[in-house]
Image 1 (cartoon, rainbow, N blue to C red):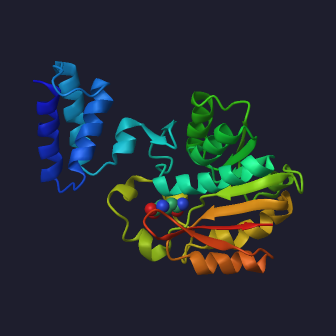
Image 2: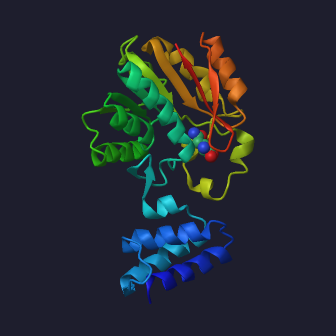
Image 3: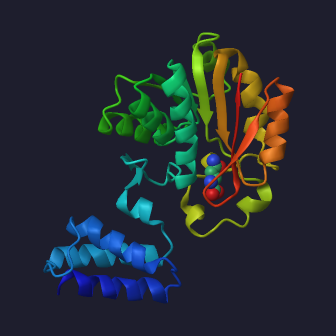
Length: 275
Ligand code: GLN
């Protein structure tokens, strides 16, 4: 069997399971297992078995990212597993805004609720600025540390294991020391948690659920971290598509003048302000 035939077989399996992205995903599976994708290369028995195993898991609903155990974000490779959120293209936009800001201002920044570490590591690698990445979950912290090492960011990232609202964590960061504060906190509300897409059900609840209205973290994060941000610094958070106005209001209450940024699908995705 050659690669193109194997790919066809996987496409059919995925299509039969109702997967609309079957062509892209079949190609990704074949590429993941066989290395470089080339149509007429012969497939070994081991490669075939491995592909069938992965396709089988995908058919049952598991996201491709967890099956591979890694995923690309902003051109960097991140290890992921069910203990961390899958890095999403929308979050690359948050990184872009931060990179743009830090390239002008320079200075240290923070990534709160860091998870796999993709925001802090990407922005640090792109700007050369230093980041404090804070993550509470023990299991997620393992991925954070692994991703720091694998992306050669040991000199740039200080990983802190703790609750972002813990006084000890907050007071360890000097006042007026940060040029940017970034966060993609849990923001899914109770209603949406009950209607999650099949793939999202594999992701950790602690990284998704933001309380009854999804705003629990935003209610505290601006107040708790305002004094850490320098004047002229950027406070930027990812939000759910229906939270633009509510999160802006919370920022305004802390004295900021926020703007809402839309993602590539035209949905509200980031609220940010310069102090
Ligand atoms: N974007 C995720 C979703 O699609 C939520 C991520 C988060 O809560 N930070 O549900």
